[in-house]
Amino acid sequence: MSYSDSLLTNRGYFITFLFLLLTLVIKKKTQIMKRIFLAAIAVMGFTFANAQTTGFSKGNTFISGALSISSDKTGDAKSNGFEIEPKVGYFLTENIALGGKLGFRSDKFENDSKDNAFTVGAFGRYYFTPASQFSVFGQLGLDYTGHKHKPGNGKSNELGAGLGLGLSYFLSNHFAIEATWAGLNYSVNNNGGHGADKTNSFYLGSDLREVQFGVVYKF
Image (cartoon, rainbow, N blue to C red; front, side, top):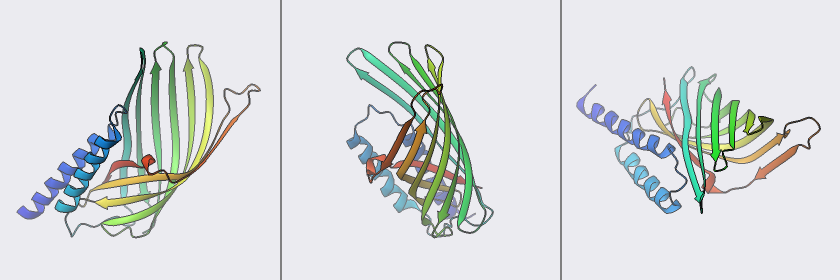
């Protein structure tokens, strides 16, 4: 590897590290600060990207995920949350990738009540220009989540499906920045079962504030 290639790769690692920091979403931060941070990273990404970088191909495996920490305070009432959700995908063809994910989320409230959620899911993606440095993809996902509530040891189960769009931009031959947006979602929660009424939720919209950013590593 030449010195220039090594320099571009190191810059890609640096920008990837900054995006990993972005995934540590603290809800106390304002939207203005978030936008400034995103704009700064976007400028660096386009400035330092290697023009010879390639995207995905058949047989590639990639890993990604989400990590978030939240903290809210209203008066003397406080709540804290933590979530981690790793995912892995594999390209069956040049354009189609299938994958799965596991997730855990914990929310703790001022009155010592707590909600833990365990998620297992599967997703399929279609990339329109997978071999390019920049590509748009469509995604269909299916998730199953089990909730445990304390005190009382209450339980509930939720099944959800989502359809959305995503953008992938490679900073090097292994690291890519990813933005995903779920515009259509449907879920049903049994609220503990045993005769309880189910909650059906449907969402269709174009709220760009719901865009999620992440980092992908390609093997």
